[in-house]
Length: 450
Ligand SMILES: [Zn+2]
Ligand SMILES: [Zn+2]
Image (cartoon, helix red, strand yellow):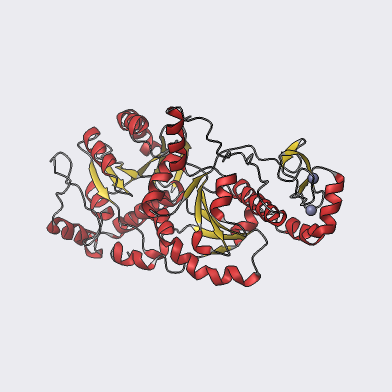
């Protein structure tokens, strides 16, 4: 598939034109392309105004030499699949118009007997192009346009959103809607788990937790893969920390969005002066922590910040390795949309929303943070600090704090902290394939396609 981006600015859908047949030349698609830009305007407008999935939602338009009938029958789900094919254009079929008979005949057309060799090749190319679009830009639908009859559109839905379906039907009543069969289990991209820790768990602990973790995270991974995958190479970092994950998140991420909404409501009713510690910026005092607790909390926090900063995930999982069942989810981007999906996938799990902030970088001047030294006279207070020159992780308010902390044990941890720095490429290698995530899929989506 060859294609080029035509990206709009701001929150609007953009068109991505591509060719399913490599034999199609520019002059073959030039005229229909211009006309499509005009005719798709109401649909793009609708998406922008009321149903945009993400700030730049892709609308993929695929040109093919296949006939309209073959496009529709070739892309439609087989019998036993989840959803159905719309009626032919102009006949005003209701959504539920699919009968077993039409399904069977669609399957029959696509069976090897009904197709010429050229058609079979084109159909294969079209399916591959749709799959590639799914993997690369993850659209909700692909518009398939036959070059011989470019006004006979087929919307190939990759995910069945009811709102979108009825809107497309209303805005382009002559076009057909087809729900595309999902690729076979092996071909479904899965989010990859990236296992990280804050250097405190014993070496074998994370290995022993892997199996449980896959079990716990299964609904989350499944939801991501089915409905909400950002791209083929999406990563889900899992960070094992030595402190209470919820406490870490409350202090250094942001409050539970539900709690935050309640707090806002309180404020609206004039309940000021609650004295609750600031959840976001890490400005909440840490005086209540003992020396070693402070160390562990700062260690876990720095690792968390680094993971978000370097990997830029949409969400990550925090697992307290001493009480792993109390894991929590931290949502780093796309809040509103992801929150809805997350609360459905994980109804009982606390979700914390990352509060965007400017993170101090090791080379920044005038860093303000806690001093790492347990013997610091200002322990637990936010103040001007400087980075340890070796690891660029620990921070100290004075040379005497740095020297004291080095003696007190940082000399052992410092090289490990420096060696464990995350790089996006390196972290991508430490992955764990969700071993059984594909198994259920087989029964759910029917038989894998040949
Ligand atoms: Zn200090
Ligand atoms: Zn150091």
